[in-house]
Amino acid sequence: MVEERDGTTELNLSHIVRPAQAAPPEQQRSPGLLLLHGRGADEYDLMGLEEGLDPRLTIVSARAPNSLGGGFTWYDLYRLGEPDARTVQSSLEKLRRFVESMVDAYRIDPKRLYLMGFSQGALMSAALALVVPEKVRGVIMHSGYVPTDAVPESNPTGLQGKPFFVAHGKYDDVIPVAYG
Image (cartoon, rainbow, N blue to C red; front, side):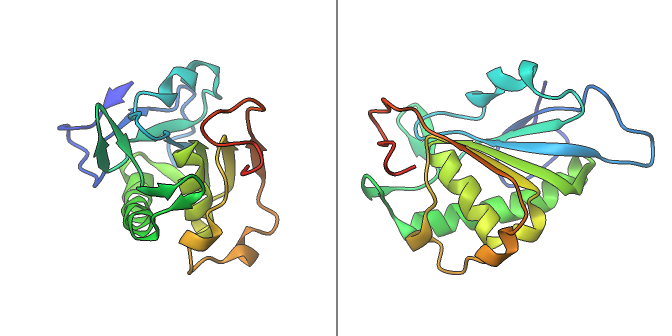
């Protein structure tokens, strides 16, 4: 795993990387997986899953841009199910720039970039896919929901044919399953 806070790869969000373990041929780029953590966590939170993920993937785990206690958050909340659209938009713009730079920085095939998010990260994964569907191959969402009101410039028709895996804990006491 490579930590890229002060390293040679400068991108607009702090992040960590696990390069593809089964490198593609010299002229090809690897498929990529962008991990987006939940509220109050950081870029290390979802990297515990990397051992069980396909070794052909370059895995990048980004840190949300806003501090929250000892962790980080993608957006502010008015109340459950009502994300602050202004902070969603701000983080979404940062994610757009991050993805554009990330694919070149880590030799990720831009046609094979997948997103995986948990809680707030699931919401941000859905939002990014809705706004720039041409940059996303598929999405894995766990314990989140689609932020339709917070993403006014979405392009849902661009998602046709793209795989989405959506899961939610039945006893989730933070985001009820009905939201998912």
